[in-house]
Length: 234
Ligand SMILES: [Mg+2]
Image (cartoon, protein in one colour):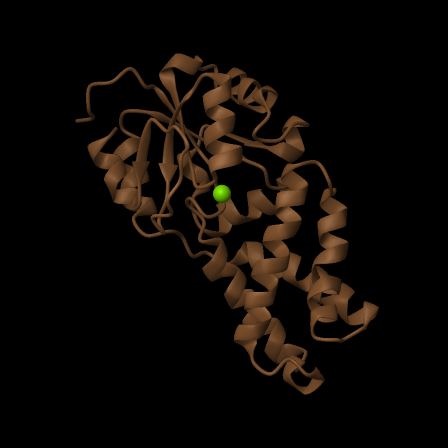
């Protein structure tokens, strides 16, 4: 039995909300670190490599969300910038790392704790959807390899929609595709700007997933630090 509310459609962000980006990415980076013996090139340990990746990647994705860089731009720049931080100037290596990371990372299956438990609980009473700023091919692979794909009626990526969160156009596109109404829909995500502010400006209720309990001043309908808490809201 679900709670009494007017929601029929739940829209989930994917990366960092259900799919454990950090864990999956670190696993892929570890494998590449060993394969290409990056320690022999001056990167002392894999932790330095993964920390540098996180920093560079976050900054590139912030730029992507603000339309300052394209999908191909991220792919070209990511490992070039990381290697250059370790004073390694090797375009060929950077291209190899970029290609192999893109192939490897989306095949990793690790999910945020309680993902399956919560989706199994919710699917009985709601239609579930994915709304992500990721790329079509990559996000599809992640959903399949982690066995998430069977839970969702629709999957909208910024790639397929032609708009990205926080633009209202992508929320409109997503609810139209889901044949939903915004007053019976709720958005769950970890990003205050793209997921929460975007949905709120569009007129949708929101659940902010804040696992690190970061302080903020944004207006959210609900806030959780563990996915299991969704059971007391929905
Ligand atoms: Mg996210």
